[in-house]
Amino acid sequence: MDAVLLTRKPYSFAELSLSPVFRRKWCSLYEALDDCRPNRQKLTKLYLQEIPKNKRVILAGDHTPWPRTEAPTLKDRTYQHGAKVISGKPITLGHGYSTLAYIPEDKGSWALPLCHERITSFETPITRAAFQLKQVCKHLEVPPITMQG
Image 1 (cartoon, rainbow, N blue to C red):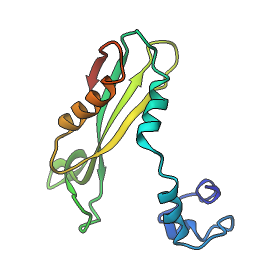
Image 2: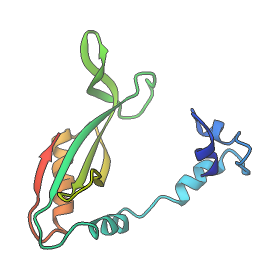
Image 3: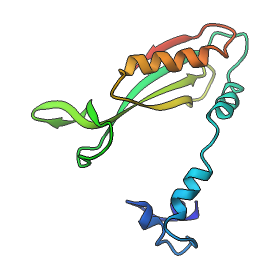
Image 4: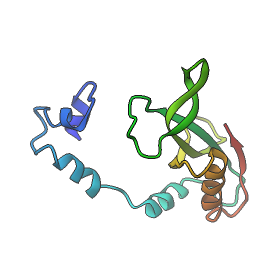
């Protein structure tokens, strides 16, 4: 983590391993990611504790494209609507991600992302958002107000 924080613009895992504060071998970066992958169900339960009980809350969904035009061998790469232009059209090649967040009505400008998942080539942003919403609503006592961006 020190290497991540102290390296200005790391372009790869290998570059992080060159940091003077990184004391392990290059392959240990992948081991660290694998070892510290959080349990999604426990993390979701922790996030849901932040949502008020017995109150109608606002949940917002969003689809974000991640352009990967320079990665032709990337598995499951699809066409995504985005800011980059290919052949005069606002599309890009890469992955799409769906985020579902709790938006508090009280003061402040923060949002709590409850789910953030990649959209596969077998689904659409709406079907992924609907699945995420269904998973979160299982734990809510009052149906939420939802928006999709």
